[in-house]
Image (tube, rainbow, N blue to C red; front, side, top):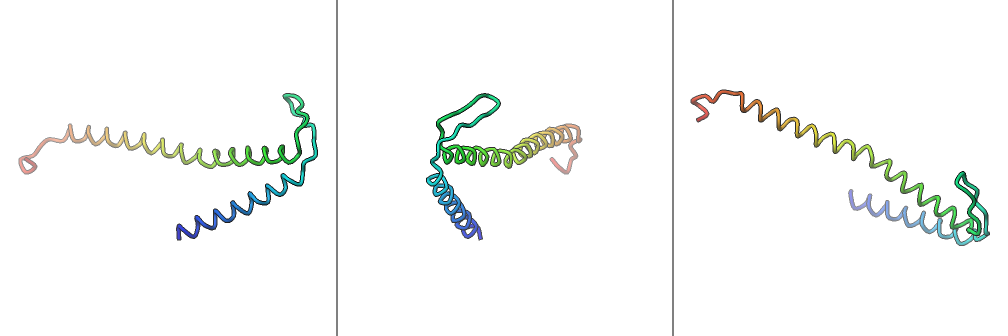
Length: 100
């Protein structure tokens, strides 16, 4: 099942990349982009859209992973707390003659 998902994801990625490349090659008009930080002139429309697409994908990817990273850090902290509490419990528990 994992291999099928991998190849399906790879196929979708290749199709989307091909479509983006075609779109990029068909939109070579030079445009001026006005932002809050200033103007950028002499950029082809295809390059500008491809850049925005890639930046959006990276931001989306990072935002998708952020909750997972925060959860991993929380789990690590909780495991450390459990270990400390187990050590405290073992230190406070009297040793009986059966355990020796």
